[in-house]
Length: 470
RNA sequence: GUGAAUGUAGCUCAGUUGGUUAGAGCGCCAGAUUGUGGUUCUGGAAGUCGCCGGUUCGACCCCGGUCUUUCACCCCA
Image (cartoon, helix red, strand yellow):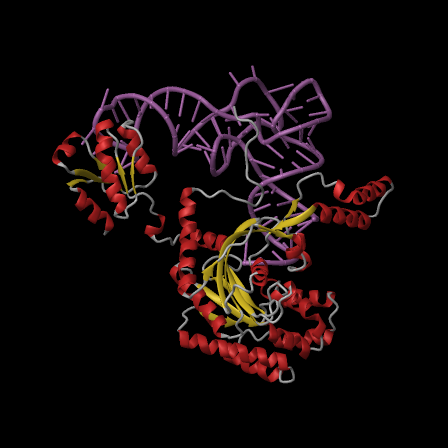
């Protein structure tokens, strides 16, 4: 009966009504908070020109871009490329040669790609609409992004990001506000978290201090793994990347300040980095930020973590990452300040800072904790049983009135067996069933059955509405 | 991208040292019960044993490939 079983592409998922209620709780919570702080929503296309995307996420990132093949007969577009490849194949080609030829063809036949994150398209948006935008521009964006990654636990090929960014303002108040948003969001979702903060300028200062200013990227990538793999492995990797032994030794003495509290860390760094102007600026920024947070009465623990580097190359100031405390899961939110993202698109001198909530991971965390408020998963509140044509006509206006009062209500379509209708209410977890037959119609009342307790009461429409509203 | 494991009914899983008709629980559908669901009882439907190929008289089982999911790397939300 069934031919080839249908399926969704690797790393993607369907979301049932049940799951969507839970996901919407996350989206609604975030959206509400974002708006409260004055951020406005935008959307950008799922696909962007590859020229917009390529080179923004480092070498790895380029590999993980989903590319969209042009429509039409693309062989004609660059015949040479294909001729070149077939010539190559007729001899015994080196792998490098093949890759080059393959890349050329890919570049010819693909001009668009699916977005990899929301930040780069946002930068493109800002540059493109700069004349209409009033700065500072506070925007939020909740849309899916795609990565051609190998799927794993907590990692999907299609997932939602919920970005909040403010561009066109240098003020550290923005950083503080974002952490406040994090605090409020996870507070509302009842997830215990820790916010890890660092500053790219401090990392630069450290690279200066150990005498390897050029190797900042190598250093941050290796350091990023410290917590996961331990110093030994990081050290190995640093050597592999060609850092001098002396430099690695000095790095160790700085990075391993884990025992200290925030203030001690800052004091320590201030002393060590005295010669680095950039480094000191970073220390000062963190100090200011922590000062703001105290005034804002942020409840979430905020912890300076020098090992926090994050893969992306475009951060220039603050770096954030949020981890759930009670669940094993990668970071569920992250971001930072980027001074020149719009510069890539020809609009230099605009500083921005933003964070991205990973909705799918938060969803996984919330599922494990099972902490959804009850009303967030409630759908229909009352189902009217359909007894027949006359009863149907009698019920329709009642249902309309109930809906007008803001209560989710349904009338069962068709007067099928009662058992069937009750089972429907049961399956949909509808808490109340309304029965209106001859008796009720004559007396102008409704028999309302509580599906959980099983008890049944006879009430008027007005009573029903006030009962379900409260 | 590298290494490893996994795949049997809608779901969770048995099973066969290679041998005729592949099982259970849950779920689903119908009836017992034409104004009462979640309990009970009775009956029923549902599987090319992930897909393709090979070995064999014979493959769900062995071998190769491929896809899916998962784990460890790599990277990341």
